[in-house]
Image 1 (cartoon, rainbow, N blue to C red):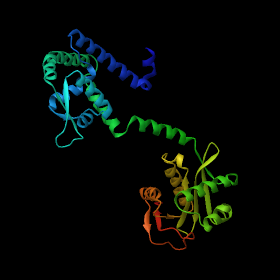
Image 2: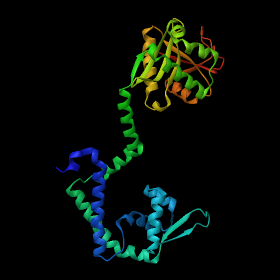
Image 3: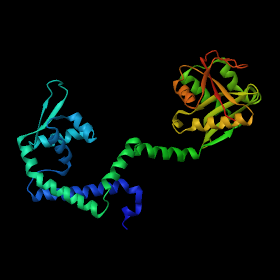
Image 4: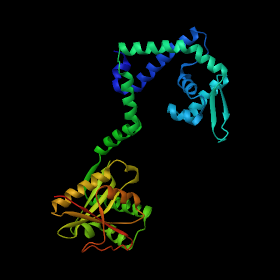
Length: 319
């Protein structure tokens, strides 16, 4: 087993690239043996132009799933070899239409036997190795279309980093971080009211000592998320101070905190969570809606003391 094989799936991209280059290199040798000035990398585009008769650069990019600059590069190479010609569309001057020249059509005829031999050789290779390789490639392409390699790797990295983030009960040593994070959030989206300052100046007195709890997300000793939960009746708790530091969003930490808040609400014997939000907080409102919160007009014993909230939401919790 060589080193690339030893790396296994980590070297998947390299192995596919090496295999592609090996195939391309052998086909290139065939073209040279036939004294044909043609490159394997031109084949798919040349075939597309041949079958479509006339096609725009944008359509080529879409059909071949390539970037516009990559298509333009090959188009320019083929045009330089006088195998294709390009002209602007009569109906849309922005479109560059591509078609084969007489030389290009003649080349297609001359290479028909060579291309059929390449096709048969490819079938032979698959028969000797993996007959359904093309079907498997199609499955891989479908999987990547649904979720790219980039997205998958980012998720793994986020999950790995998230596992190292703790969710702990409030500790006064984190008071300044708790206050700063919530003040920064308010400044970014709304404004800080006197009531906000009053609560944040002494959250132990104003939240914890008044039937409340505060929880903190901690990453490497730093507070990167917070939420407060206060019992406001026999049936409900109010959720507030719910925020995650901007650079840590997208890691499902909000879902983690809310899930924790739901469990804490159950422990208190309550069956719903209520909160205030604002029409400016579109991202937060979308999050709450996704998590099952519904708009309500009012809730007994719950008063907006900031004077800015425009909407009340409630989540009914199944016991």
